[in-house]
Picture 1: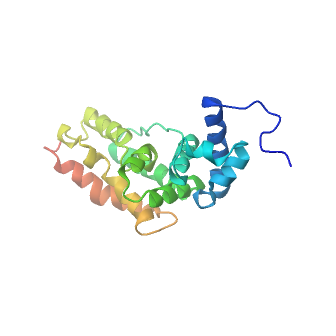
Picture 2: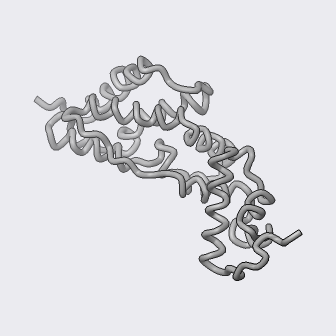
Picture 3: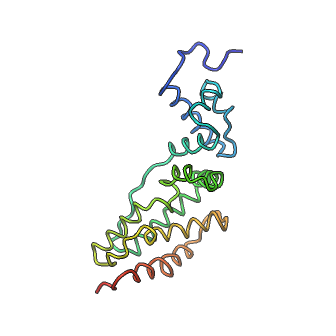
Length: 201
């Protein structure tokens, strides 16, 4: 049998790392985190496990690196009012968390447990820790006079996505019904925002 990569130019550095990541991405997309193994990635990349372990010390760190290659950034919605923006952002997040890619994210978050360094690498995709789009939405509302400047706080801005994430992570739902999203916005998010400072006229 030919060794993986036999007859090919031996790759090093960035080229080898790219090949390993590409192989891990393919494995993750096909089998999810549960099916991701160092052996499979090494075989697909045409290298050996030692080459992988030198760059990623375990399956979880490799899985997170591969997952980040699969994600894209979507700009926050701009419907013209705060309620519409927050509800649409929640609906987008709900669709994402309900998708196969969202299932991989949930697997990775579960495997990371309380490892803050690993969780930080998932912040951009996990939603609750990624305050930027939610602060953008709230900042637009303040500029329109829909909310007071005192409302512009990361914990206030992200409370809606935290509650949605809990539906998936804590309750284990496959998707959140739309009436749950509406309830999060109308019963929690908007009242909290209105309490932060004087109500705009």
